[in-house]
Every structure is written in structure tokens, then in C-alpha cells.
Amino acid sequence: MGRIFEVRKHTMFARWDRMAKQFTRIGKEIAIAVRVGGPDVATNPALRRCFANAKSVNMPKDRVEAAIKRAMGKDTTNYEEILYEGYGPHGVAIIVETATDNHVRTVANVKSIFNKNGGILGNSGSVSFQFTKMGSFKLKMEGLNSEELEFELIDHGLEDMGEGTGDNDETVLVLRCAFGNFGNMQKALEEKGITPISAELEWIPASTVELPEDQAQEVLKLVDKIEQDEDVQKVFHNLK
Image 1 (cartoon, helix red, strand yellow):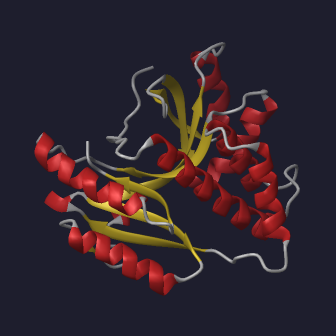
Image 2 (cartoon, rainbow, N blue to C red):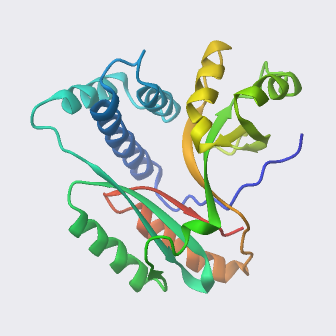
Image 3 (cartoon, one colour):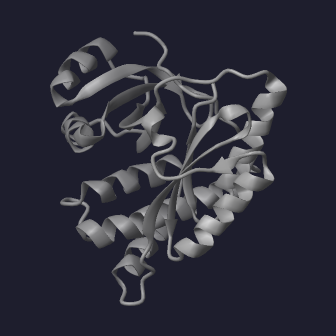
């Protein structure tokens, strides 16, 4: 088992700003999950994924419960998930996932950030063909037999498995599966009593771009600016 393919991460946010952004992101994911599948975690795998991710960023239980109650209310905000694609400085491909209640505001903001930071917002499909949408599960290494686990999960859609890096730079076990097998993988881990550190749907680049450090920082500055927008959920790129 080798080290799994990962793209460069960055930590330009201040810690508390990053935590607040994570709480907001998960709150929107909870609202969408409840709207689509209801508030019962036993029958809503998307909501279970939200719970796991809330736990991974230490989101307080009362905030999670409050997000569910808001999602069930009559005056709840209806978020629409919209994908934006573009290129950053030096030809780096970028995908932006958003959850918004005002797509006119969101597209204007995202386009402005691209334009002001050396990028350009493209049309739908202009970038996503370079990526594959996959399920990604991060597990604690302790107490796991990776070889046995890999063998057992192949029948549930496991496509890639290896060591990766967690949000605190710790070594974690990363499992990846096709988008369509996300639910199968989640269920298989639950049946084995394994609680992931995180369970996400990610856009994985087919290949990466390697740049000199000064040019890479230009790209990461753009990515950071995009991530700070209130409507943005996640940003993916192919910078090595």
C-alpha cells in the first residue's frame, strides 16, 4: 500500500475563521440532506455523512440539532447546489461547489474573484472533464488491518486505497470509490463498526500541474479567496 494521490492543500485561513466556515458548510449540507431525504438519520445516508463530517471538525451537537430543526421549518432557506468551473493562474483547473439561495449573487461573486486574481470563469463542462467525482473516506490508522480491509471492501466498490494526510497533517487511511458506490461503501464501513474521520464527495483530477513555488502561491491565493465566499462549499484544483 503506497501513498494515495493528493493535490496540494493550503491553510491561509485563520483557525477560527476556517472553523466557522466549516460549520456553515456542514449546516448547508444538513439542510440539503434533510430536504431530500428527511430528518431520520437511520434512513438518510446523506445525513449520516453530514453527522460524521460535523464530528470531524468538532461541530457542537446543539448546532447540528439546530441545523436539522431549521431544515424542517416552514421558513427554511432552500439552497441550490451549483457547480462552477474555471482556470486559475498558469492554467490550473479549478472546480467550485456552491450551495446558494441566490445564484445571481453567487455567479457574480465567483466570477469577480476569478477575474481579480488572475483566473477566468469558464462554461459548464470546460474543466470538469479533467476530473472524476469520487467518494472519499478518511479513517484513523490505529487498529485497522489495511490489507484485510482492502480485500473486504473491493466488493463494495473500493477503487483506491492508501495513506493520505488529515486536516491536522496526521497520517490517515484514505479509501476512494466511484460516485455511484458512495452509499455502498458507507454502509459497508458502518456494518464493520468503522466510523470515518470524514466522508466526502470529491473531484479528483486525472493529472496534476506542477509549478514553481511563486506561481503556485498565486494559484493558492485565488483558491483561498474563492473558499472564503459565503456561498462556496468546496474548491478542487489540479495543482500538485
